[in-house]
Length: 64
Image (cartoon, rainbow, N blue to C red; front, side, top):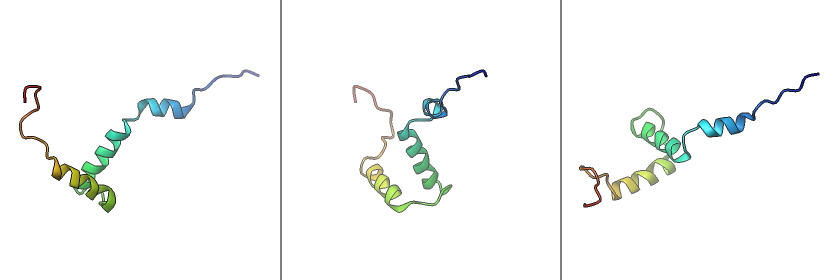
């Protein structure tokens, strides 16, 4: 009987997945664009922070 080693799929997947932050950001943007139904607590808590601290219109530089 020949025994062969197969790498654990969980470790291989974990190495390939985007970061949790990137996954959550993608979900939020899909909700914001109407591509997914809004999950109220998740969506509105993030929307509140984004509204409180809007993205600047000009790129950030160290001198700014």
